[in-house]
Image (cartoon, rainbow over all chains, first blue to last red; front, side, top):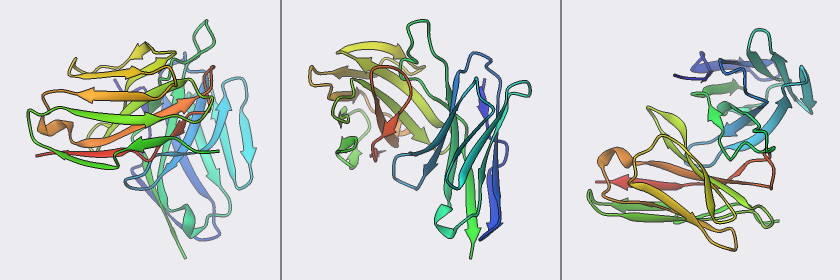
Length: 117
Length: 112
């Protein structure tokens, strides 16, 4: 049962345009959602996160939108740059009554973003 | 501030052997979690340690185990290696409460 899904395996965008990466989830117990960027043979690098009590969070060129009713989140990158080319993972976790997720992030399968000069 | 350090970066082992991977978290981070990344299964949670105690465990066989030391450094061990254990093993550290997961560069394990 895949609780976090990224249905687009790849996305190709022209430099300077907007990149929109999508993610759907099924577990309504998730409290936080994160986006990571990853290069081959390296660990994921944290980009941006959003709490389930918000619907938007912005950090520079990166904006994450959360639609709780649709159980959908998206990452917008504006403007896209060739250096943004990588695999993007969305991840989610739920906070227990003790205030911790006990380390468990549930990841989507990733979307390969290619930004062409 | 040093990041999460994983050693070794690359490892080649033979089926049936065992392997130990090491992870040093960010200073002050007490939670260390481990993940396996394979092309077919993506990134999957193995287990999490906090204050030398395993608090959470994913759906992996008992051949996968770990431990955490008093300085928060963690090791994971895989016994009786199988070809399917070939993967990138990642560890992540975080502060006391959830969030802020920072990953290391991983250990690439190849089982032949």
